[in-house]
Length: 273
Image: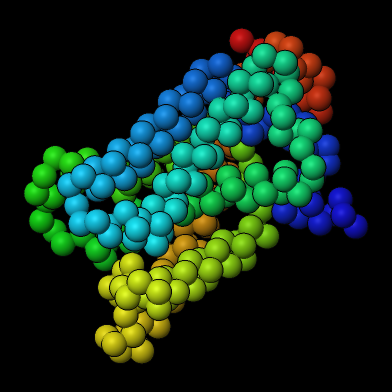
C-alpha cells in the first residue's frame, strides 16, 4: 500500500532507477550539475542583494514585508531547489548514484513535489506580475529593473531549464491538488499578513474592492495555475517523446552509474559520454 501511494506521488520504488532527476538528454552530468549550481548562486545572490539594498535604500519595514510576497517565497524555492539538485547531480556524476535515491520515501515524494512546484509556480508568478501588477511603465532605476526582471522573468527561464533540458517525466496528476493546497496556504498567509502588519501583499486581495472581484481574482489565479500545470505537463511529455522516441537521444549518463543495463528495458542503448 505504501509503495502504491508513493508511486502515485512520483516516488515509485526503487526511486528514479534511471537517474532522470540528475541527468539530461543533451548535457553531460557534470555540465548539468554546474549549470544548476550557477543558477542557485545567481538566485541566492539576487535575494541577498535585494535584502541588503532594501535595508540601506528603502523604508525600514520593507524587508519585514519581504517574505509576505509569493514572488519572494517562490524565488527562495528556486534557489534551494537548484542548490540541492546540483548537489545530487554532482554526487551522481562522481559515484553513479545520488543521495536522493537513498533518502526515505517521504523525502523522495517531497523532492518530486518540489520539482513540480519549481516548473509551475515561477511561470504563474511571471504571468500574474506582467498581466496584473505591471503598470506598463518601465522601472525608474537600474536596481528595480534588474530585481524585477530577475524575479519575474528569469524565474521562468530557470523553470524552462528544468522543463526542457533534463530527463524528468511529466509531473504526476496527484501533485496538482498539492499545488492548489500550497496556493490556499499562501492565501491564508496573505490575510494573516494583513491582520498582523496591516497591508495586503497584493492589492487585488483587498476585499474592500468587492467580494465578487476578489473571488474572480482568486479563482482566476487558481485556474491559471491549473492551466500552467497542464501546459508544463504537455511540454515535458513532448520533450521526452521528441528527444527519446524520435531522436534517440536517451540521455547522458555517468560512466560509473551502471545505468545501461537498467535502461535497456526502457529504451535500449544509451550514451555515457
